[in-house]
Image (tube, rainbow, N blue to C red; front, side, top):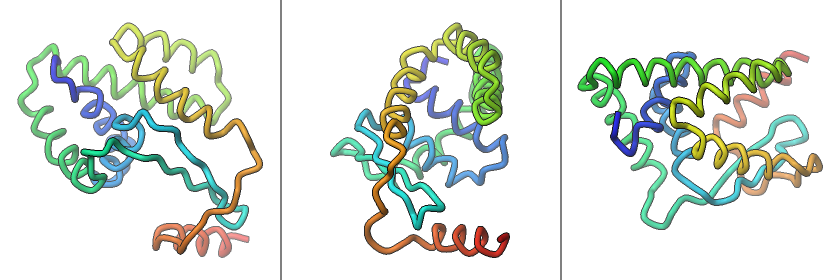
Length: 163
C-alpha cells in the first residue's frame, strides 16, 4: 500500500477490530499519528488521565478524524491483495502491541516491534513511542483544567459506582 495515509488506515483498522467505534478510532488515529507535537497528560481527580496534543495548524481534529473515518474503509475496499495483506499484518501487530504492553510482556512487545519494523512502521512507531513516553515520564500529573467532557464525567461515574 503506497498511500501516505496507509499507517492511519492500518491503525484505524486495528482499533475498530479491537472493538472501538469508527469515530473514536479515527480520533485516536488523529491524536497518535497526525501530530509531532508533545503530548500533555493531566490528572482528572486523581482517577483518570487526560492526554492532549496540538495538531498542525492546517489540521482540524474533527475534520481530520472524519476524513480518516471515511477514507479508511474506502482504502481497504480498493486495496489489492498485497495491500490487504499488509493491512491485515499491520492491524494484527498493533493489536498484539496493545495487548502485550499492559501485560508487561516485554518479550512480546519486542518481537511485535521487530515485526512492525519489517512492515515499514519503524519511524512511525518511534515517533509515537517518544511522544507517549515523554508525556508519562513525570508521574506527578497536574490536575486537568477546564470543564470535563461528557465522556470523562461518564467514566468517573462508572469508576465511582464500582467502588
